[in-house]
Length: 361
Image (cartoon, rainbow, N blue to C red; front, side):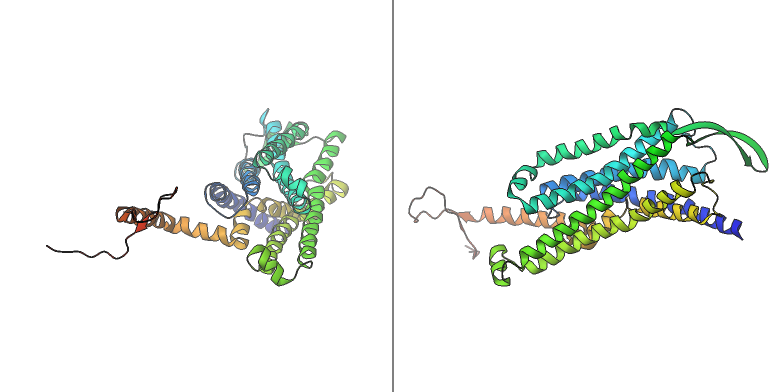
């Protein structure tokens, strides 16, 4: 019974991870196009942060889900079970993981600082500063990931293949204190600390928006902003709440299960699915990897402008609208004259004829 359950679970993962690649990589690339080249109603800094997040999530899907997990479940001997790919792949995986997590954290902190301080808004709310910040996050993340290239080692392992014993090289964790300490540090830097910071600063943002809303009456807010601020506030809190809940719900289980695995079951065989914590750890890992594919759905769910641009791209309505605008502008330009009776002015006055009659001679 346990063997059958383990087989079913392995089959689920063999289908799940290729499906994530097929759906997630195109979705992230399309999200990058929508954010950068369509008018989705985002600020310049938000465009830079979210487009950079889409790119690093795409690399995470390639290094972790496509090359590592998918090949693990579908090939007997993936290429990275050899030198030097064993170490290189670990470096690339953790570099993309750190980059994805900390872009979300820094973007959240930046939103709070801009909301709270005018000086911070003038300093941080600049496209060049945001670009430098994103590049620094990616570079620092990969520099910090350099030691992760040595936590794995390639050793020959006896395996049973089609009823026969064979010896194949395998890339696995070193059984040394060095590897254990690095894994603990990585677990907190990619899970515990980012989760805590995102929760704290999103709470502070929501608290600040609610407190600011109470300082003015509804009529004063409508005069200042030209629209019902209550609806805007509700949409802002919905956006922050959706992103925060998605990040925490999908990342927290992996952090908890990895802490348990490294504390009580560090010497157990990781692929033994008769141990419940191994099953829980793989399920948590599946949820964590899902986090890199959900941004497109989140934007569609909480951003009306993003949905509108998406519909225009899919249905090609934008192209038709631009063509109609060009034709209208050209036609009106043909039937336009300058009124000579008007007093001279520095700026030319254009009079458009709107009632033309055809005279037959």
